[in-house]
Image (cartoon, rainbow, N blue to C red; front, side, top):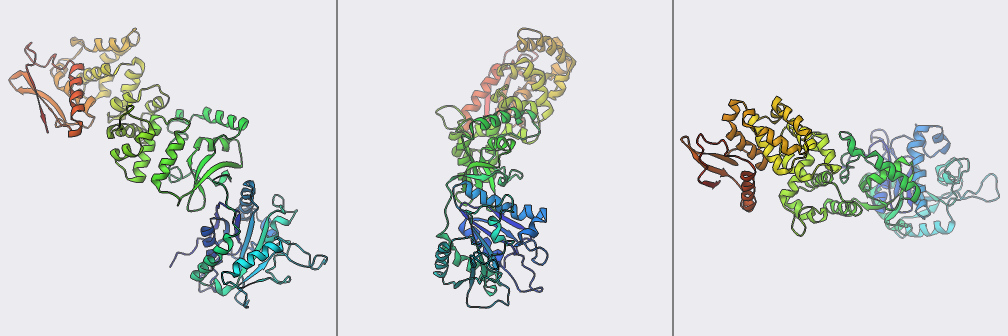
Length: 589
């Protein structure tokens, strides 16, 4: 048994000219009255026909008769939730060059009996009679064609008597909504409207109501005119509030933790361009299963259009059921990179979202999206370690840490390689920020210089923030900042042996090893991952180098180790004798 429909006003978006309207779809509990499942009929029809629908399951007819235009107009809240969507949907259909066909569905009362299953009302009557004015809402020829199509599905029909409530002639009836000039903003005589009254026993059960809907589908399909893939839609029907709505949005506008990333000036410029030249590239939207839209690409164009207060926006529309999530990630990525490449943080954001939604690891992400993202070395396949770097830097943003680092990566003031290989592995955000803000940003060291600086700082203290805050280091930074070659000057000043306290000198070798381990093997690396130690307590002229690597990363790890030993004067104070180390061995765990 399905769950009962929620008590609300359902507003379903479509992609053709048909608009279904239900004024009385409230289904009371069985102990109150016999069921009325006209809302189920309409919603099943809307899903099968992929058409627009406004269905009231909120207000009981005894409380609020939504077929009475005058009564609705007197209630602003009801007007905005029921009548306004009908008008907006009609305008959306018209703006795409189609003639709207409005079908008002209602149930006959239980006591209404007869052979006819459906009565059609179109405001028919005697033309010249004041007692029976003629207010047709659809041409008799089109009505005849619809009746034939419905009867072909073995549903017996008739035209409602002119003096019955199923005729739809009363000027207050919603079937006359687009024929009344006094209804400001609604009058549009081109709109065709038809009142369909279904015999109560046919929709008194949920299953039979849906069966009747499925019988009507092939009949009404003949009068359905599909919209183009690219069409005009009401911008207010685009949702951007939930994480699900933002699933395919990888641009970083709106991230309030990083003011620089919002790029308000860019949105203003884009809005000005659209105002002058129009929208050159339509949005790409996904029609959700709940009948509204979310953005596949064009988030900034959407923001600019909202800023211009434009009611309609041109968009390319896909159905949520058309493709798999993996296909939509590819579509979004292709559309987003067509005009401007993603920045490194946006690439990381894309990869993180794709990993979570599709359950892909780094190697699979590299295989699936590496080529389209345009990352890695030209002519070579993107490695899983490259994917890891982008996700690692984006994780800093997700955690809300190091805003200046993230902003400078986005604005190309900080090399991504430095951010991903030197800063991202640092676990503590305070250490990361201190290193970047006090040394990297003002002094601009090269990566080899930075590696040496990390080794020298580790001799001061294993805690990086504490080492940088050291009085001697701060004095050295101040002197270096004023020199023509700031990074080289800082290295020279920190390398002075007499600048180190005695305890730190004794721990210098061990701390240098720790610094190399952190810089080249990651902040979480242990001695099992990398270590250098004297061969024995008494032999300080021979050392054992131990490190661990994956088989496929062996060559890279060996090169990394050689680079680390070359760039760091590791053995300068390693022993009590002036001898140089005679040999080095390596063990692979």
